[in-house]
Length: 217
Image (cartoon, rainbow, N blue to C red):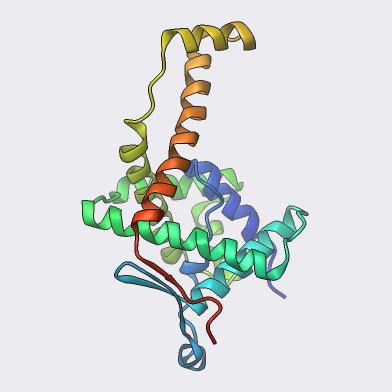
C-alpha cells in the first residue's frame, strides 16, 4: 500500500518555496514501455507538449493531497480541466524561464532540500528513504524543486516591478489593522503581488499558443 506521507512533503515544498503546493509527480520513475505506447498529447503549448501520462500523474498527486487534507474533490471532469490548465500555465512560464536563461545554483538548491527535510523532522537520509518508499527519488525531487525555484525567479522578475505602494496606502492599512509600518508594507506588498501575479498569468496565457486536446479521443 502506497504511503500517505507524500502530500505532507508536498506541502513542505510549498511552504519553502512560497508557491502553491508543489506536485512531485515529475520526479517519479519513468513510465513503463506499455504506458509510453498508450501515451498521447493532451495539450500543445507553444513549442512544447503535455502528455496524458504527465496529467494522470499530476491528478493522482492532487487527489492524494486533497484527500489527506480532507478536502472535497470537484467532479472528475472539472478537476481534470483545472489541473491541465495549471500545467499549461507552468509550461508557459518554464519556457519563458528557459529563454531568459534563469538557473538555480546547487548551493541554494541544497539549502532548500535540507530545509524541507528538517521541517518534516527528518535528516536528509531519512527524507531520501521516505521519498523512496513513496516511489520517488531524491534526485528527481531535487530537480522538481530546482524547477519551482526557477519559476519563482521568473515571477519575481516579471511581477515584482509592477508592485507600487503609496505612503497613503501604508498609513491607511496601519490605521485599519493596528499594525506597524513594516508589517503593513509587507502585507500590502504581498496582496498587490498576488493580484499582479494573477493578471500577469492571464496575460501570458492569452499570448501563448495553446491547443487543448483533452477531449480528443
